[in-house]
Length: 470
Image 1 (cartoon, rainbow, N blue to C red):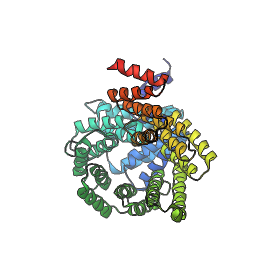
Image 2 (image 1 turned 90 degrees about the horizontal axis):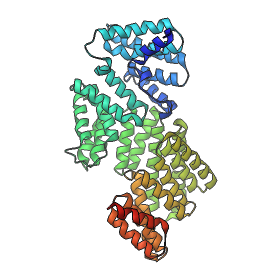
Image 3 (image 1 turned 180 degrees about the vertical axis):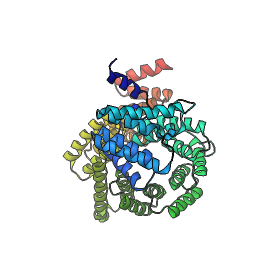
Image 4 (image 1 turned 90 degrees about the vertical axis):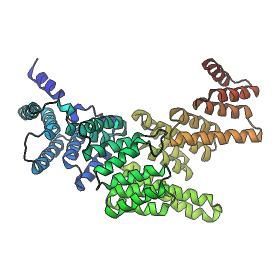
């Protein structure tokens, strides 16, 4: 085995960003770059932030910048610690070994490999079981992509099992748990509420955790405690972008949309390139638009509605500009182009969004839902709308869009039945909804009704399959 292969074998055994199977296609590197730079500006988790930023620069092809960021990470660490061979440096030294290998600086690469080896020799366990390594690995997975949330949870849980009282691991575990827990729980047995409370207990100065707990408490109608937590977080951290943006979402969800917009605008001043904040502002203005339309007298309010629609489009365009591949923002933007009667632009945007969502395997059900809305309201094509609502429901029945698709499909079906128009197809739609929800007997009943109104091979096939499965 030649020298290069021996070196590569040693590198593959390291615990660092280069060996954690972080795929370039799973993340919007520009967006992550901006998020990490925001952490640098706010001095949050600086050593691990520079480590992650270095790997992003490597993926972008900027090896010199990657090396510079790693040296900054090392410098920051040494300013805070006297020990040169502390286990916290396993990841930084590992990354330095890898980047020097890619830059063909083999002597430097071997030097950093020796430093990792010296740290490993001083420990009683494998580096993959070191809490500091597990913690940074979990933080990196959480930062890089929602696709890695389960891996992030797993890392923080292992770190917690080893050091249950450490605040960093409690906070680290709470956040991916918050992102992934959507089961049927009560306020008493919800794992994420329990973990967020524990995380706040061990991190009393972390106001982001308080606002996240408030957002989850609202789903259980615990409004008083939730609002108290948000007010406390805003009082303590009035200029923290994440506190402001989550608080803005909190008040918007409570129906206090103007208060939510004001907070999000403050957050935007601190993070003008945040695609998340632009998207949240667009969602707030959408609520204002819907409220105005529900009040009636559309002609008198047309100018006001148009001004709000302009703001929605502006913020969605900024969200998609600062985060390429932001599927929900892209499809919502296409839908609003349709509202503006710019049908060709909307169609073009939808096709790009469909392609991006398929390539990235990301939120395709959201695109189907918005495209169904576009077909129904902008193009008046109910047949195509039904097709795409069904696709959305099949892909993700438990999502907001999946549930809205059920609502829209039921509306279409019930209107047809009430008007005695295309009744067979209406019962076919209802049969499809029951089938997707696992309600086999109700589905059979609807498909049998559909068949009474005329032969349809699709209904017959579904009916036979359902009867055989019971």
